Image (cartoon, rainbow, N blue to C red; front, side, top):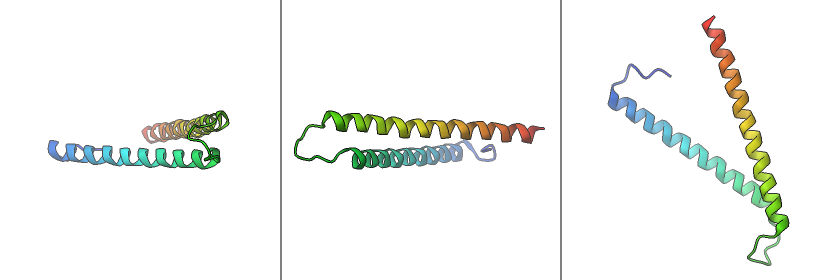
Amino acid sequence: MDFSRYNAAEQAQIQAMVEQKQMKDFLKMYQNLVERCFNDCVSDFSSKAVSTKEQTCITRCFGKILGASERVGERFSELNQQMMMGQQQ
């Protein structure tokens, strides 16, 4: 996005808004991840301690979701790069 038409104060304000939105999106994604893995993996509330089975499940759950998210991000980057190359030609 080209912000050159804005003065320095406006650019800083836009940048702050973008960063705030990114943080909000990240926290929402993290909250959803925690909630999903908790609901899928934790079922025994008779002890304060997390069982080995629950810990293993949570670790796998986080790993799978973060791995998938990383791959989607990589693919998005690849497609964006292809689109940029196509526009330059």
